[in-house]
Amino acid sequence: SIRAGSILSAEPHPDADTLVVCKVDCDGEDSDVSEPRTVVAGLGGKIPLEDLVGKKVACVTNLKPAKMRGIESTAMLLAANDD
Image (tube, rainbow, N blue to C red; front, side, top):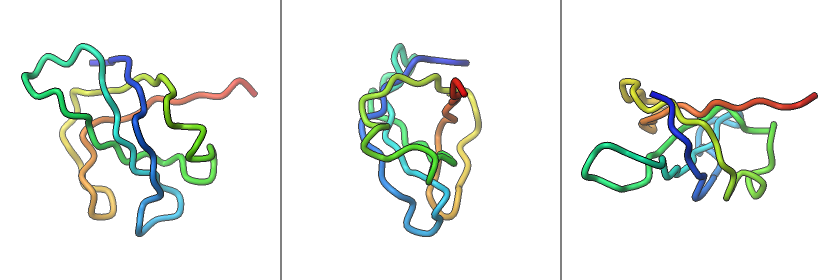
């Protein structure tokens, strides 16, 4: 499912220049756990990290968790630009 989310933090991935590790609060989560999701996104070098924090994003949340360079990602961010 696709949910609106807010990026709470964004840090560079320790092992990949093109990946960013984000903590995302996905609005309307069905589960009892309200912890932010860890999302590894391929946004490194495309958007400054400080510009990501606080942004609203679309999150695909019904995916199987996947390890990306050793960090488990529990959702996917959908991003676009207006160029």
